[in-house]
Image (tube, rainbow, N blue to C red):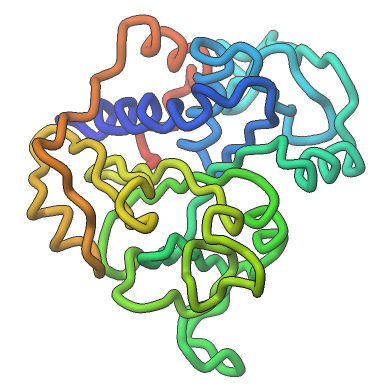
Length: 259
């Protein structure tokens, strides 16, 4: 399977994250999550809301890429203002579902976008910092996209810096239940699709991409996965979905998304 065929399959799989959300704000951080949210809004959940990445809600998802060639005459279809105050209202009210690309994820779904290394005063690598991740993860649904599935991402212990909440009972606030702590949906990687539907929110293998085995996924994951019965193959894109991807990414930027 070519890189382009694989990334198209990943985008279509990731688009299912928002399928049953209804009218919520979809945020895709990075090219694949952005195209996945756009595809969902265009062809799966037409009640989904997206912005133009600036300050406006749009009536149709905005294509990616430079405004040249097939996008030379494109005009953003804005339909309402979406400034910071309205964004925060959506976040705190739980009316948002983001798909993000963390550097590390652990068995509890806690994610790290901040730093690598256990010495927080002198990290081995400094990244974004936790940014708004703690509040986002505590208040609305989140999914993950990982372009290269490996034990460096799906770590054996706890992530080096807990930047978002997960299902770790050791970090459970007094009086809370695990179900109230986090709303984690899909995990899409270059090997498979997972969720947190195993016992006690254990990460569960939902589908395998063509040519990938359960053992390959296990070897690339630093913790035990829940595998239930025969794992199906991740569906290939439909003709309609491929047509939408061509409209949403006419310059073919997604071809290098896994590099």
